[in-house]
Image (tube, rainbow, N blue to C red; front, side, top):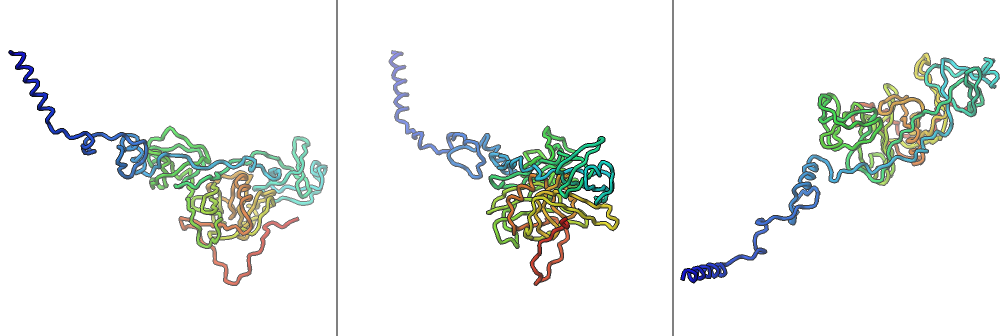
Length: 393
C-alpha cells in the first residue's frame, strides 16, 4: 500500500512538471546569458556579438591614452650604406698658417711656398696622393700643390630614415645617448631602456616639465627634449609651394623632412646656422647643385674664424650662399652651429642630392617664431642668379 502511494505521488510530480509552460532557451533575452570574448582589439563601440573584455579592454584603455593597437614601429628603413662614402678623399690640416708647395721635394725641404692656407680653424684639403718623410705626411691636393696634412677615414656614417608609409604620429631622434623615465620628470625613476645617439623613437603623448618638452614613447616611458629632436609630420603643402614635392627644414627642432605626393619620404637630423648667421626662414627653390666643391670664408675682421673645406659633398644651393650639404668634419647634429647652411651627414646629403631636382622647393620654418624673417625681396627684382661662394682657381 505504501509503495502504491509513493508511485502515485511521483507520478503526480512528473505530470505537474510536464504541464508547466517553459519558455524556449532561444527566446531568452540576450542579456541573460554570456557572450563570447571578442578577439583582441580596441573597440570604440559595443560590438554586440562579443564581449570587449580582457585583452580588448586593455587595448581600449591604451587607445584612450593615444596608443594605437597594435603598436608598430616606424614604416621606414636606413638607406643604402654606400651613400655615406665621400666622392673624394680628404685630409685635415693642422697648425696655423700652412704653406702649399709646388712639389713634394719642396714640401719636404721647406722650400718656397706657392700659396698659404691661412688660419688655424677647420681646414681640410682633397687628397690625390700622399707620401711620408721623416714621420711627416704630405698630400697632393686637387689643385696640384703639396701640403702637410693627415688623411682620415672617420667621417660620420649615420643615416636618417627613408619611409615606406607616412606615420600617423610624430616621431623623433636622439642626439646623444639617453635613458628614458617612468614619468615626465628627471626626478622620476629611469626605465630599463636606453637609447643610443641618433636613435629613432615614436611620439604618442606630450608633457611640459622642468623647462623641457617630454615625449611619451611607450606606455609609462618618457624621453626629454634635452637630448632629442622631434619631427613634425605634416603632409599639407606649405603656402608658396605649388608642386607635390618639397623639402621641409624645421629650425626649432633641427630636423629635415622630404615630402612627395602627400607622403613622407625621408627624415633626418640637421644643424642649421647659429647666432647672427642663422638660416633664413622662407620658401626657396634649389638653383644650383654641385657634387663636390670648396667652401671657404671668414666673418670676423681679423679672420680668426677663417674656414677652408675642400670637397664639401652634395651641396644644394637654395638661398644665395645658404645651401644644404654634407659635412665630413666633426659635428653634432641637432644643434645650430653652421654659418647659415644646413649641415647633414654625408649619407643623408647624398640621398637628398639624388632625390632633388633643380627648382625643388625648400620650405624653411621655425615653429617657435624666434628666428627673424629675412627682408622680403622687392617686387621686380631680377631672378636670383647662380651664386658660387668660392672663387674657382
